[in-house]
Amino acid sequence: MSIRRSLAGPLAASLFVALLLIMAGPVSAQSLDLTVNDVGLSIGDSEEVTGVRLNFRDRRMRRVSGINATIWMPHNGRGGDVMGIALGLPATGADNIHGIGYGILGVGANESIKGIAFGGLGAGAGEDLSGIAFGGLGVGAGRDVIGITAGGLGAGAGRDLRGISMGGLGAGAGRDAVGVMMGGLGAGAGQDVKGIVLAGMGAGAGRDFVGIAVSGIGAGAGRDFTGVSLSGIATGAGGTLKGLHMAGIAVGASTVRGIMISGLAAGGQDVHAFSFAPAYFHIDEGVQRGLSISAFNRIKGDQEGVTIGIVNWARNLDGLQIGLLNFAGNKRSMKWMPIINWN
Image (cartoon, rainbow, N blue to C red; front, side, top):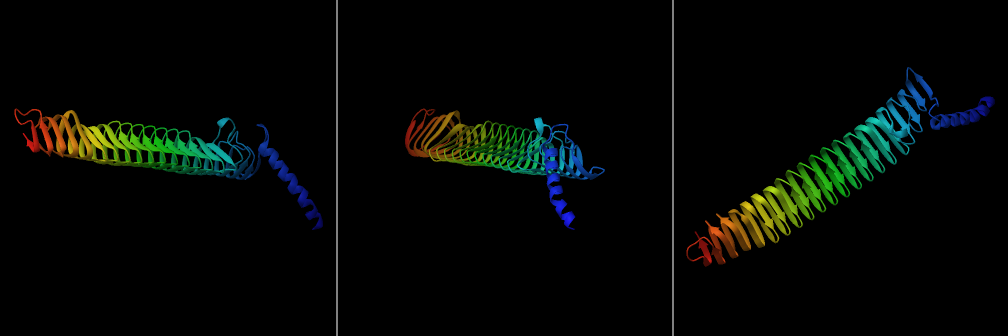
């Protein structure tokens, strides 16, 4: 027993040193494989293992089914597939990670991550990411993201985003976004958005927005905005604004259908809506239908609805004006009328 005990310490130390040399050795280094038919424990840069694989930095790894634990990211960005757990102490990566990816500093995949990914600084995939992912600074994918993502600074997708995405500064998609997006400064998509967007400063879509947008400063869409919006300063759309839209200063679009409520001004060209703007309502060479309540209603086009204000001015009146002073430019007589005017 004394001989065995005396040899145990040196043997263990020698084995430990050998393992370190294997794990951190040159490309030609061999791995120590305690496996049967590639099943078991492998230490070093082995190619295929089912079980547990420990390595300093992957160079030749093709596939691991089980646990792949590394010290650093793959050499020259080359990696294989991990089906199970990719563990980085402090960082790890692969071509594809299907299962769980965890890195104290970061975890990444050249192609795809499917499952759960957590990186102390960042987590991401060069192509697609689906599942749940969190990055201390950022999280995202070069193409599509499906699932739940959260980044301390930012979260996003180069192409499409579907699910829930949260970014301390911003969250976004290069093309379309469907689901819930939250960004400390801004959130949106380069093309279409369908869902709920919450942003500290700006929320919007490059083309169409369908859903709910809440923003501290502004909300808008390059084309059509359908749904509900609440913004601290302004809401607008390059095309049609439909639904309920409220802003602290201004609300407007070329075409409006629904309800506009503004703290200061509202307007558009083709407006068929209920509009409330304490200071100013304006139609630019278009048509007003519905009801507008404002201190000054100025219709530089056709008024076919009702305006209520202190001063109501219409180039062509085919409706009703109620206010202290009302003007209808198309009337032959009594163009200016107090209290009420109609045509």
